[in-house]
Length: 260
Image (tube, rainbow, N blue to C red):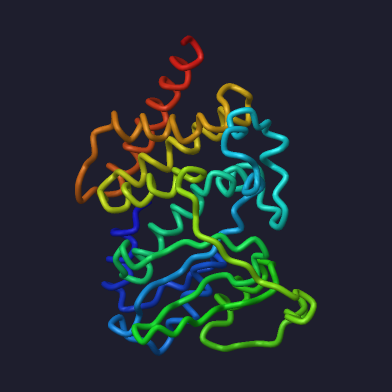
């Protein structure tokens, strides 16, 4: 949530920031040797979460137990819910913007249920390069630790003949309104991404506690970002302050919703 500060420090130090998240690790590998002008767009893939095939009208009645039943990844409760709302992918879009210095209009998200393609890069000539691998975080961690070397690993390798089929589909913004909310926060900049992130953490906790419905998560975040004052060019103190204020605001919104 301090992307501008972190990337500025990286530039000042004359070093590289090596991402560990699987999607950004994939993009990092794919963009080695490419200039900014050669990159047409970055395509982040998303599993779609545990509720990707549920009817939209049924999402309001989803229980925490159902939402936590992710078909691919074991990520812990909070991130699993973020995967179901696609808030995690929206935050990854913001991260990709800062990590790779690329505009939001050149970052796309596709639903990829198999989670084999971790990200793709399209070059300006229309070619698309995909980074594929076993669905295990040990691989991006290994790549980050060993960079710039490539090393043998004892964790297994991908066998495409065993996968059989890879599928992709566009993100339905009606199902995943959090994605557009994150992009808008990223475009606004300043403390807005920190506000959004803090509100989401409060809202997810409230859902897991049974205080708000699943569809209430994004509504709480949306109301919080609408009501909070955004500071431009913030330092870390301003970011931490925005985080605290947003959590308090979100809790107030949650309590008022319960009274209604």
